Image (cartoon, rainbow, N blue to C red; front, side):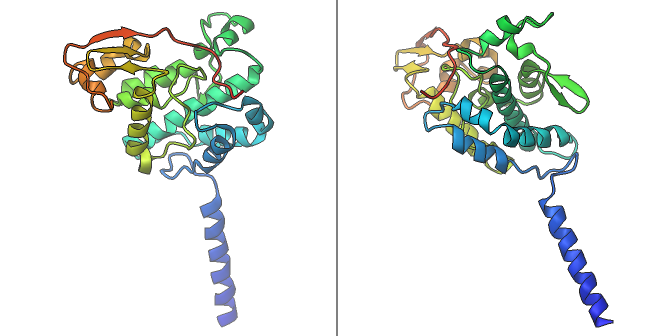
Length: 255
């Protein structure tokens, strides 16, 4: 009898271990982004530049991670906003890498749209190649219809990466709900104070086009200088002159 109970206990423990190591079920709140962090740390340098050939060589690991994301879409009723935001930022960034390596080598992500000539597709951000929850999504729909529409979180603009030089740096770790507020703050501080993306003095700011394209996201609770002053190391005056830098769409590739 004791032997039978002992064997039964071992079986239960092994089953629990297997379940803990298994991918999250649909609607689960415990998606593990460890694979994505490992890939980012391996193929992204401290300046945010990407080794796309390295990602291409690791395409099996990348595809495994993408499959995990696809199979575990957010449950909007069960997941917190931070859990959902982290998920969708990671989806955007990981599938952007996938899009680039599918057409690699290239000089700019914008070359993809002009080279493949898909009817009714205006840009690479309109290519519907992401199947989640039975719906074909493109990068634009993730950014504008999900992240921007559903969440009042302008810092997402410093987290999603469009594979271009003028974009915010691709972070070397996955976004996760437990770290999200700190991660987004760090992304905002790094981007706004990066002189290659923004030049700020008390009287004048020459800013990334991101602040022009999405000005409404940053000015819901005040002026643009007021928003920038939350993160800028240089305090902008209330009536500072604002202008914008041309966007460099060159691929953010390591050289």
